Image (cartoon, rainbow, N blue to C red; front, side, top):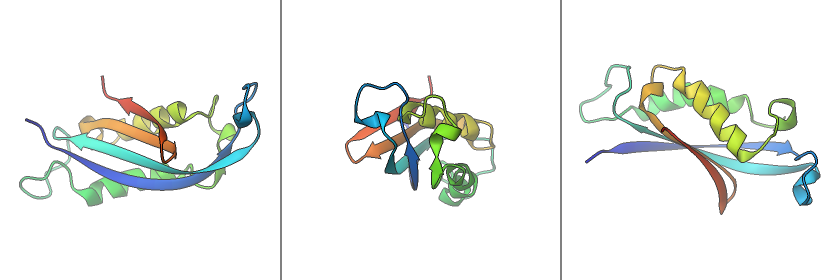
Length: 121
């Protein structure tokens, strides 16, 4: 049995998909949700017995990463600026932090029913 914890963040962005055959070729925006999921195994001291990771530690580390994307034109950051690329970028930054060893999933939604998920292999 394993227990995980998940914290949700949100951000807004604009992008377009160059040379894409469809509506997303035009500049448009999203109000996106990001979920980050952790299991035990991270390197920070446990904040309280029974916690996988403290939600405040997740917020302290992940919020500045998400803030780098908020209200930005993502074509200036990513090639291509897809939900998949964004999820991988967020995961790579979290993996470099003290709680990164416990990261198992990053999910980025473009809409309520469309999302990309990065999972630890």
